[in-house]
Length: 471
Image (cartoon, one colour):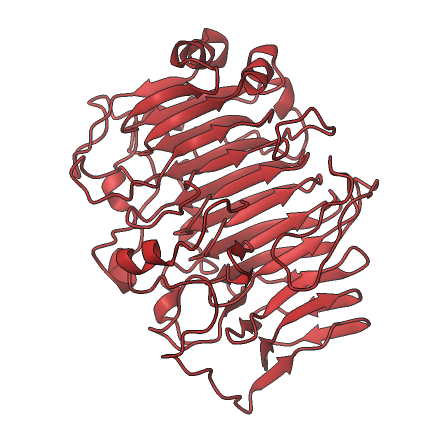
């Protein structure tokens, strides 16, 4: 999300050695030399360009695509740190990056294993022709300005992004203006996005600015700022998404699971930000012990503010300072009028408040909304025991199985996201709400959270240890 604070490098350096300042190349780390297998990509792509598996492609500087970029399954693309390599698909361009479950496409740092860090390169930006609620918005942070306002084609296609990993992105292309792992600006519903993992990003893992694009199977892993950020009239749908935080690392702008605004001023501009998420698991920093060394910069699992109408169904929000924060009277009005809905959501082991309000919304008002029997939500007892379930009736997850910042490499990897056998999470999802009637939603997923009895992060396209992967 937009930064209103200055340099946060001190926060990063004091927290973990592999998170570094996003403000350019580290003089202690020389830029790698080009090998015979590498293809330098520094010029804009205007025609049809093929990236093939036999080569490794190096993005140097901002590479704009106004033509068609086809990327074969298994292809590796690396972002150059010195020149802040970034890939931008323009409104008239298309990307067809179609990996497979066993041969994903990987966008990653150019640096060697052990030297990689959040903010090593820019990221992937897709700009479409769908509507936003801004007259002349530009993609934040780019060195060459790209405007995405004025689109009217909500069904527009920017291509396909399937079975793709984006690692160590989020460099500041301008001072204190980082871009995200995957940025989607006015992207239309004709675009296909599924099976995407964003890891170790120096800003938000995923951010939508307007548009109508839908997505399934998203992983936001150890990003600096928000997991899933929605703005400027985004009205798409997302199902099956998981976010995992590093307790030691958060952003000065406050890191949340969901952060959602209609726009920066909370205006009534249309289309109103009103995405629908279902089957989401958001794992915050407070999941092991109240005495853990958790960054004070963490916020809420769901921060709905500035006149947003974000809706969340069949999900688990676990281990945040606050589970749900309703911020501002316009946001509260959206919630109570039915524009925004929270249904079949479990708030688990949130440290300070399960539900709270801000900016003229009281805690009591937020709690009354959340606890309305119509929504069938549930607040679960806070219990930070590392080995026991959250509740005696096995209603929740064992939270000790997630990222351990005291370890490195595969030892820090999540071991399982599955609810315990017999958990009520496995049988208390539902798709009766009118917002869930679209054919996009898999209505057989009648459980809360991103996982039922199958952990889809165990598939080969997922990698929780990109720091030590040899590409």
